[in-house]
Length: 102
Image (cartoon, rainbow, N blue to C red):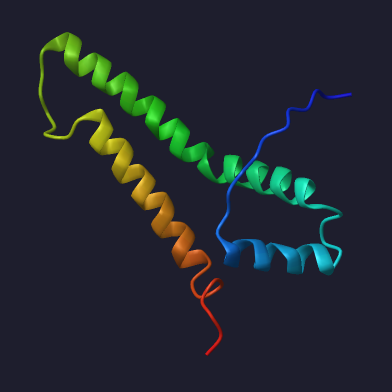
């Protein structure tokens, strides 16, 4: 059997309320299962971002070793942009899902 580790998380109230719908409808048997599956889905979604980050790390390493400067952006700035892109994609995909009903 897999080894488990207990963690505590803090979530926005609205997210918890929406999550309870999935539990009440029987989609997930408990909150832990919902979180586990959500993290698995997020890892799949971020897989391409992680691959791009690895490529950027390699590229930056090669550029630094050759003394070339082809970008004004630091790795931190690129990572920030990747995160912003991920968040933007998520908002587009789930636009309005967390908004209050009018």
